[in-house]
Image (cartoon, rainbow, N blue to C red):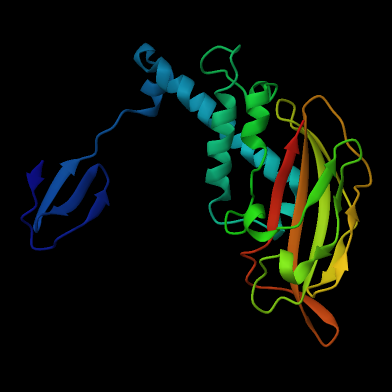
Length: 249
């Protein structure tokens, strides 16, 4: 570390030199760190390579899930969704108790009850968690994917954003294999309801229940709208929109 005594005080990196200020004084140091080539080939960094491989796999698994859900995620997500999914996928990967270190997989972790439980209850929009938005009793039938809601009073059993006049409910079933990245998504027709004191009993039934070699995710989506002159507009403030994993099989 050396002091920078020049007339022009630089902060940042120029080629292999880093200029910075500390305690009111200016310093310069040569960039350090370990080369990428050494990390990829040196036997001393085998653990680092294993960790990097599993980290990349967990990130890819989160991306695979987001893409498989398509527009459902677009309507209900927060700015930290990718990092939150990475954390969840990493925890599931750690539940792979058969693969060698560096080769543990999310798909294998999901074969365990603990792995499924780690994904169950996931909210794609942390600003609109299902349990803080929706307070009506409901029953999920995993044989049909349907969600039955009895005597639902939207004005009393929803935490809805200011200005919202209507709410849309939708169920979905996703069959996804994180190893092959093959997925199939089916969802119910959208049930659109006014936010009032009228009790209704909607049933959200997907067009099918996809199956496959991976796992099945059963989800519910909630989207809020404002009606103006007979036309419903999606609220710009989508912080209350919900996409929630009800069950994982």
